Amino acid sequence: MTINKRKKNSRLRGSWTHGWGAKKKHRGAGHRGGRGRAGTGKRADTIKPSIWKEQLPKGFTSKVHQEIAAVTIATINAKLGRWLREKKVSQEGGTFRIRLEEMGYQKLLSTGKPVARMHISVAAASSRSVKKVIEAGGAVDLIAGNAEKSG
Image (cartoon, rainbow, N blue to C red; front, side, top):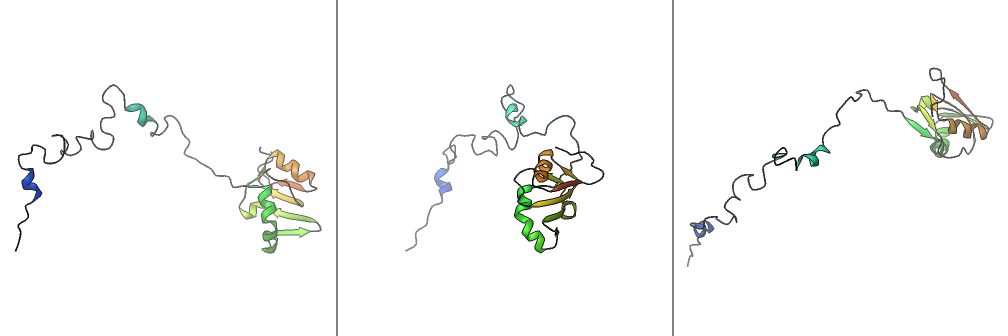
């Protein structure tokens, strides 16, 4: 025996809302106030302050952005053994000769304490890092072009 199942649509005929709640709810994006940033300029600036945070800053911004690859003394300590095995660092007596510019680093920073005597050549170095390396019995050579120590 077959049963003819009635569609839900037929039950909704004459119900005014067809199961969508309020009369206006099944009309595109009207119930939610629009799509995207619709309505941001309406109704006395109530929504504007919330989107100001997302916008780009106004005024002059430099389009030239230069990344400086920096390395700390603690990082040098951690990688010294591997660099020695890979022949990136040479050892003369008890002093390690480290050329940071050949490894892609432009600046030496002062985090950490030197565990060995190091002779480091680099384009720029902070004043504290130079002081720490010299106190450990090493030296820091700043490459020509950057005669001053940058801090």
